[in-house]
Image (cartoon, rainbow, N blue to C red; front, side, top):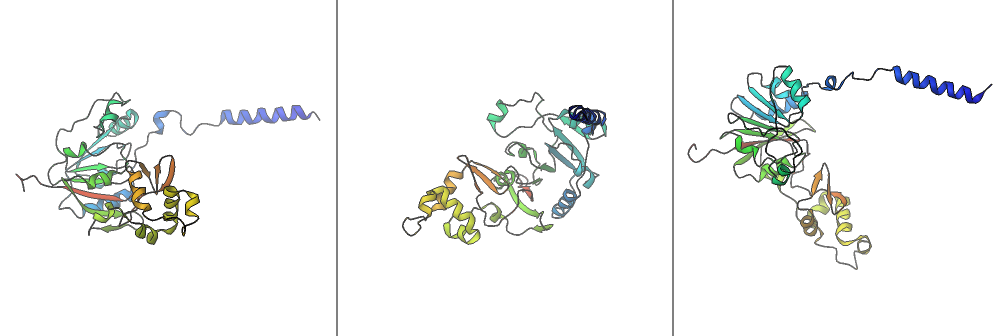
Length: 284
């Protein structure tokens, strides 16, 4: 038996099988699928149960192909905005009001360096509800479009809820916990208030606290806590963490991956927060 020929025949057969196997999609357009999310639908319904009446107009920038708002609020006028031409094309083909455009990033350096040539979007009217899920923009500019006493629903995947919490024109109303499908409509300030002392970190998560100590003081010193003073690590850690990127349970500081700063009330980055815009003096 010619072993070499046998192996070449096997390889050839494998190549033929691979070649004739159809790809999962015949072309790129077929990959574009609009979808609705049952979990998001439930979140929206529970959050908006804290509001008098359903929104009549909704703005959803950075929407991708998610049409959940239209399924939850079928009577509302929903405007979808994204820079992805394929996604917007799919939305338009199904009759949704959609614009291939960009929205203000809220960060001037990102606007100036934007690689997108899409036009800048401006809404015709001020929406009752603005939805910001995983947006790679700051909410600083787009929230100005929300009408007085209107609402913003956002998660904290890119720190959106944190940024919303310091917006003086908005107040947090409720938080939806995705881990157990529960609503917290009590005091929400704790979700945005950092633990600030070594004692609080040590009590909440001793292992994370030791990792932060090693980052601040070095591995050698932390081996001898009775010799070296290792206190006051958390204030130093928080000072170095300012402006650093958080992702899920971690924060990236000076090339290191560390536990992210802890809040008085813990939450997940995918939890949804509902904020309401305060009325202006003229309308209050």
